[in-house]
Structures are given as C-alpha cells and as structure tokens.
Image 1 (cartoon, rainbow, N blue to C red):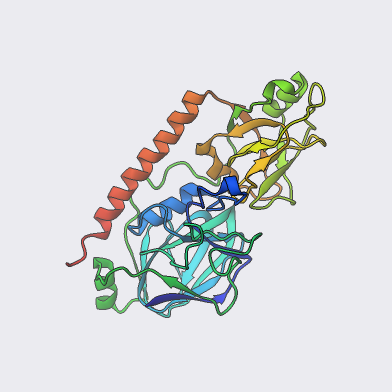
Image 2: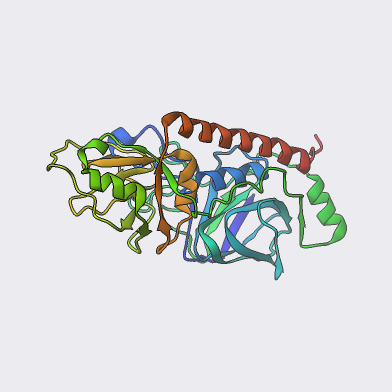
Length: 337
C-alpha cells in the first residue's frame, strides 16, 4: 500500500476534496478546497476524477515522501517545490521515485498550492467526504492539519506502469516530468489586479446608495483576521438605509455578508451553513479561485456583472478543464493492461 509520510508539516497543510454536500441542513459545513480550480486541475493532471482528495498547502509548505513511486502534480500559488534538492515543474504531472523527499517552500505569489497524487489520498470518508473540518475535528487526517510523522494513505486501485514510470526506471533519475498540457497557461488564479466580479445580493437595495457605490468603486483590503471560514475586508463601512431585522438563512461560498459594524465578510469554504447578516453581494463562482489566493493585505476591487455573464464565465472554465483533462490523459499515455 502506498502512503505519504510527513517529514515537516508546513504552516497549514490539510486534505480537501470537493466538499461535504447534503448535510448543511444539519449545520454541517461543506468545507472542501478554497481554490476549487487549482484543486480540480491538479487532479486531472494526474488522471484522477476532479473531485479526488488532494493536499491544500497554505503559505509555507511541507516536506513529504512516498512509500512507492508516485505520480504527482502541484498547482495553484507560485511555490518552489524540490525533490532530492532539484526543482520540480508545477502545473504538470511528475513521476517521483519512492522515498525521495519532496520539499515545498513559501508561496511567492498566491496563498495556496495543491498537491494531487494519482489515485487520490484516501483517508476514511466522513459523511461522504474526505475533506478536513478543523472546527469540528473530523475528516482528512483526524480532522486536523498534518503533523510531523503522519502517514496518509494513497489509493492504488490497480497496479500500472505508466510511460513516465518506465522512463524513470530506465534513467535511474529521481523524477521524470510530463509536458505541460495546452490550456494550463491560462488566466493566473493568483492575479487579483482585475476586479472581483459579483452579483448583487438579496439585500443589495437595502444598503444606502453611498454604500453600494463604495462597494463597486472603492478598494478593500483582506484583513489579517481572515481564514478558511471567511475573508474579512477592511475599507469603507457599508451602511443600511434603515436597520434590518433578519431571520437566518442559507449562505453559499462567496456570499458577502455585512455585520452591524459595516465591514464586509466574504464567506469561504469553511463557512457556516446559515447566516443572519444582510447580504450585499455574491462573488461569482469563476472568481472564487482568485479570491481564495489572496493573502492578508491584498487590495481588492469589486465589479457587478449579470447572471448570464457569470454563467458564461463558469461554463468557459468547465470547458477549459475538460480540454486540459483530455490533453493530460494523452500526454500520460496508456498503461499496459
């Protein structure tokens, strides 16, 4: 059985898949990857289903090694990754020899990198998901971030010898990389120089004209108090026209709530299932990966779009991922039956 051993845990390294759906009515958060695009991309680069569990690495990465030769891919933030001291390419599949230390450095641009392995990480699923819920302490590896000495199971549903593995064996090299698929070098998810696009929320019209104008035209800064549950934004206070009493209602990834103090909070992957604050906006799904890569201190601007535009952006992302998955499968080549 293949396992990943943790030599150094990094700042915050947690297992996440596409989330724990179907239990929000019981108050269970969805969790899942913060940057869903990079998570899914890492998986398809190694031939996995896009929703397999991968390792989410925040700001400062771990050092790990595998018990067997393993196909990996690293995506997301700009981060230096080395194997046996040699820098590895990112955003492509790389075969790594067993027991070779794979060291992740600091994120130079962006906040989160993703490590996927062929077959996926396979801790026990909880409520249908392997995602880590650190607040409740379940999922992933005992409901917590990785620690030194942890061993994480890697699914090996069948034995195979990919062309990359044969090349590595024949060359006696520690790693062999596949070419980067066409389409990977698209929009940079760590680039927030363009405005984050949003749809007006259900209470948009309950805010003052000045508040609505400020949300669209002023700059906000990601607070140091931000985390996987929510991004707190510093900037102009957003005021309601009149005080509003609300019954708590369901919230989604990207909901922008405004507490009484007027400082907006963008709800992220570990968000609660319901919220009782007025919702001024929803960040569109296509821009959530860029938001998730924003570090504390990042300046953000927001721009309203139509529902049709938001849908077209999401469909374009799905088409792009499908094309990359097909190209990645071709580059990996067939394994013998």
